[in-house]
Image (cartoon, rainbow over all chains, first blue to last red; front, side):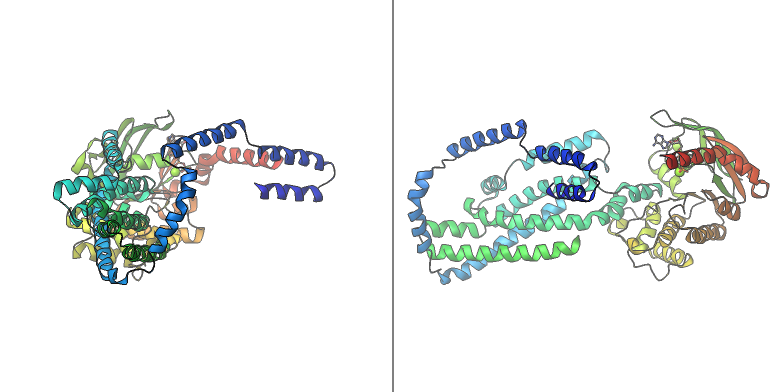
Length: 285
Length: 261
Ligand SMILES: Nc1ncnc2c1ncn2[C@@H]1O[C@H](COP(=O)(O)OP(=O)(O)OP(=O)(O)O)[C@@H](O)[C@H]1O
Ligand SMILES: [Mg+2]
């Protein structure tokens, strides 16, 4: 915005004097555009009201925060030094966490592809197919992974298997939505040409649609893997395996040094993963 | 024997545009026919009707006696397989290799299950490589299609169409996206391959000299109707001038307006 106005201002100095006033009018008109409109003001007021309401219902309390700060400081200081004896356990459980996340991401992605194809208008033009697939996806996507984990713990018992199932399910519906949108933006000319050779729809998916879209899909998969490692680190809180279970236990035992070690391991792993995946993703796009 | 037959084909787009009016034309086996006409004459629409991509609103198109528009499912796919298509904008899978783009032309008759994991028979792969070699791309088979030049891409598309082992090759402005020198080369390749394979071909072209050079017969179209349908030696400059007549006038008028503005 500013850049445009600057350019016009430059124009004023070089233009003929006759043109100058109209240019200035134009600049003032543009400048007025910077003033907030009534809509903006109303929106801002609404935002303040919503924020006030949500912070009161979230139990956010200014004075309590100030009073509590020394306790937070105390808690943090008790986390030092980290208990390095915890390290082997933390690493082992972090590997389990990664296992849950990676397995869940891989199976979830594989499951998401057929679902995404059903939900993509350009693959299945029949509205009833697309609408049922989209409804199914949206209903299942509305349930958070931790809730799935709770349900799977109740049905298949405590442990990593319940966590893997939860991540698989969450990933498959989440990715199905993403992939369906990716498929719908595909260039369909090669698809139509393949159809005109007499190729089946399944063959067109395998030879045209997927090869065209796989870099984008892989990039999103890596992004989702990142999120799944985070989610899997928490699954233990509901007994669905991974490092979260140990974290919960050490907190209950007031072993803050061990807690610190666990947090550090999670931190290092997630940051390295982030670094690796962003490097790899850059090569895709 | 007539390979392609259009009988009183009329075509109306959903928005009401009448693109073809009672077009009748027959193409004999082994013939190479060029369709010429000003922009909007209905050449692309006719191409789509011939290829079975659109169904005429009136009349019928038959390829080897079969009406494509009336077929469904497997029969339709197999009938389409016998017609090779070449498009103006190539319509290739850019990220896939040259070879796999050509193999797409073999899918209709390949094993429906194993082909899903890109496993194709040795015969299919040999045919694809052989065709690519014949269009001068023998050493590019492993390259990505989007790394090729325009002329090379259209040759890949030609190899894809020929890999179908079609009876009939239809091309809609196959060289309109290429510069004139390249265009002549690609058209020559198309015609050479059509002759070598003993195919029948209908080429929509916008370049009169190219059409005269390669076609045995020229069909002139204008405003959705056939104006003339003659052996190439009978197509006079006067006929061609008439075919494009008002377009020139209109184009000149538009040009004058542009200059005046
Ligand atoms: N999808 C469409 N919907 C409505 N009208 C269309 C559509 N496609 C083409 N037409 C109209 O049909 C007529 C014939 O178009 P067509 O594309 O067949 O002409 P063409 O001879 O191929 O022209 P060009 O040389 O510019 O490619 C034109 O009047 C055009 O505007
Ligand atoms: Mg056209």
